[in-house]
Length: 187
View 1 (cartoon, rainbow, N blue to C red):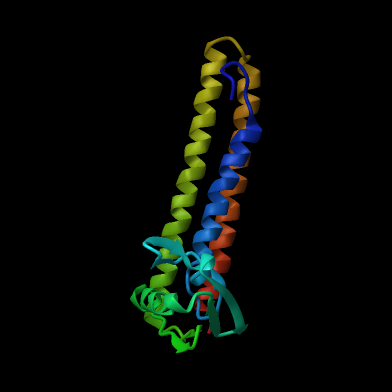
View 2: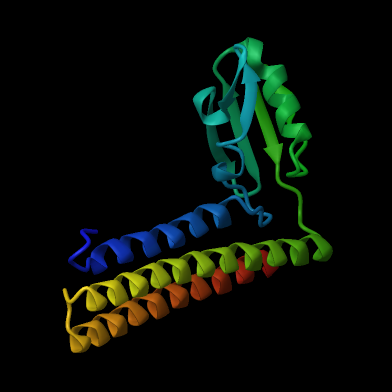
């Protein structure tokens, strides 16, 4: 943003970024259904470095409660198996040559409640990020008015737009949380 103009599109982009980050965090929450996003960004120690699993294997979901990981290099199968077992996902891979099958176990009530709490925490972080963007926008508006780059009426009109944008983003966050919570609690 230039110092003498107001760019609401930038604020919208930043708020949308908070919502996009929330959706990515939600996709990593295990809900009892198989999803490649559970493991694709898991880091595996291989070739003297840490690499994401999706750069070492083909990940697919052949059944609703099964993830299949086809490791490209047979020498990395043990490292992938170890990383999945040591993760906090509660998955126990079944190794078959260079393929690892990951059965997704049913979630118990206690684990579902923990996941709902984590989802609420993620949503609150996204709300805070959206509010921080609003705060930045409001401060920029005050500075523009103070420096005589904007009238008081323009400031008020833009402030209303920023608030509407914030309300809309928080509503999207709350709707995403509601749908994720329903997905987690679904039996």
